[in-house]
Image (cartoon, rainbow, N blue to C red; front, side, top):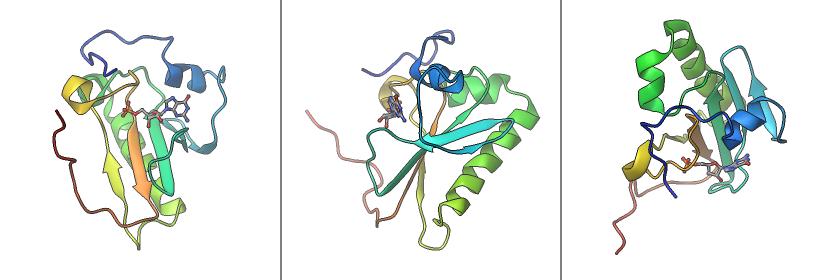
Length: 128
Ligand code: 5GP
């Protein structure tokens, strides 16, 4: 079920629990601003999630409230993770789902890094 991204931050969400070390994750990168780990249900040969360390529900929440250093640190981490995964030359795709229409399911901001195969269609057609 997609979430309402305008709701306050919920400290019991699954990514908050991964950040606190309460749930395991296959971590590929960690720094002061971001944690990156493999998606549990990969949609491509490489499917990594990058999340900010701060308590932000969505891209909207993050870009409204986060300090410049947090925004810069998070965005640099996304680039660094993709680079370290060897995705720059073949290319890759970034995706952030926001709220209901974006079909965001976990209420902690995350950017998906997809790679390892050719992508074509940018947005799937509507279903009934
Ligand atoms: P969203 O639809 O919110 O953009 O994507 C949420 C993503 O989180 C999905 O791709 C889903 O597979 C992933 N996910 C959900 N629960 C877990 C978990 O416990 N661990 C990991 N590594 N990924 C998760």
